[in-house]
Image 1 (spheres, rainbow, N blue to C red):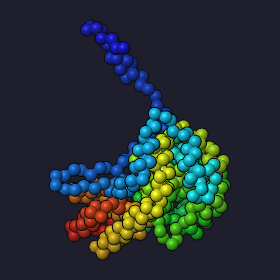
Image 2 (tube, rainbow, N blue to C red):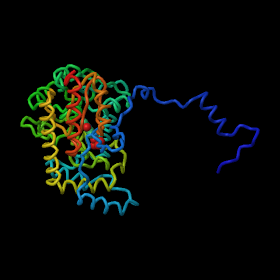
Image 3 (cartoon, rainbow, N blue to C red):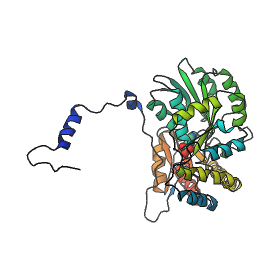
Image 4 (cartoon, helix red, strand yellow):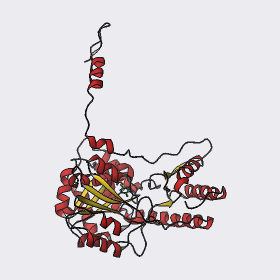
Length: 384
Ligand SMILES: *Cc1c(COP(=O)(O)O)cnc(C)c1O
């Protein structure tokens, strides 16, 4: 119930506002250091120009009919809470990977599972080591928990500098992140260098291998994450249904973690976080694995087509192993972003560093190829 304010007295709301101005709510000081997450921009609508969103590494294919059917079935009982233990999906993933269900932790997106990992490990002042530039969420969750990010610069060709990362591990390090293929540079780590690196990481430090783009890495030298996981009790794998499986909007991802680690992660996740709609869609996607793999194959063909065309234009590109390409444009990154936007494709520029462009439908990729060609013809350099 609200009370009408009398005309000559300040209302309760006005008095409360004055009080809160004098003594504002106090937030944890750690929040001052939390960078804002910048989501991929939707394209700017321009009259007469078809626009495509290539800024969030989404899958451009709509959900399969069989997945939509599972979603519709699950939608009919959203008056009920989902299974908080996510049993069906965990058992199914475990069976596919040949691990125990007690080694699978499912969360609302692998981003959330990553936050659970940070929450389980990082106290005020603890350190997290990772390569930079990499996934934008890494620094955000670390800072929000009061931890310290130790960012080790990528090599000139966008790869992790694993020896430097090993040297960056100190007494307060709790977690090291390896992102392979790396978002946004598309580079991978090699099996031998990863093994050598793991040999240098103390056993009490957790190593997170983020494999969000696993399915797009078809190189012969690709790391076998599961094999690495089995041999190292301090390794955790992070995987998602958002990219290759096209369920970004439903939020479902998971960690493969040794039971003691998995039990810790279970404590930092909220109950009922993964909806039944998401659980059923993920199960249906696993059922449709072959169909979804075909889509991945066509993304890879398009990635090859785009990279070939750009190299022909004169771009010097390192090979990308994700569903995106990386243009190391340095100081030209933001201006490239604006030019692309005006041509109908939204891309992801990182100021002073480079531009990440998702491989989309063929028509969208054609626009990218055209924009890249015109950019060079306008006298811009293909490398910074
Ligand atoms: C997209 C992405 C994720 C997280 O995706 P979710 O949608 O939260 O599962 C995690 N890591 C990297 C490197 C990514 O690019």
